[in-house]
Figure (tube, rainbow, N blue to C red):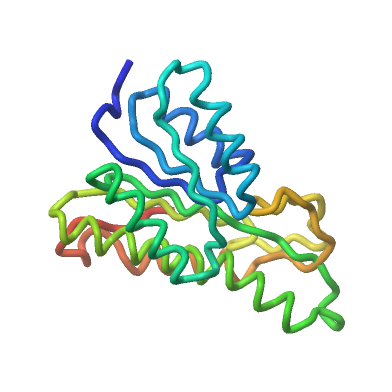
Length: 199
């Protein structure tokens, strides 16, 4: 069933896991899909794996680090230029760097916030600008974590959705909480363009 035929969808952090499954579902439903991942090889392979059983090319790889705002802007520019429109964006990319509170480094903190918060915010901003300019009542979905509402001590074994690796380090309560607050702030009633993020 081509429920999303004619629609263009972009999903970040989609080389594996939830992001991959979303790309697979949208493509199976007829959408043109941009599959993003920080790992170019994984990105290319994931797109090929989804396209193979479909017998048609609907998923296209767009490798970049979502913490890089200019790279994200260019990714959107390239995809919209190819697809001709943008209907749905899922900001799925996220990492967890584990580390003790007293030993956590500024570099680890900046990387965590760069991907989880900065990446999600500017992914949503780019999507909203494009949808508003094109007068498309699109959908922007921001994915966070349960740690945004409930702390989990020593939360372990969380996969880095951008690189595919697992890190030992502190949980991402702050970033997840900020994403949730951002979505609550931009409720439909406050958005005259009707292009709003949802968690």
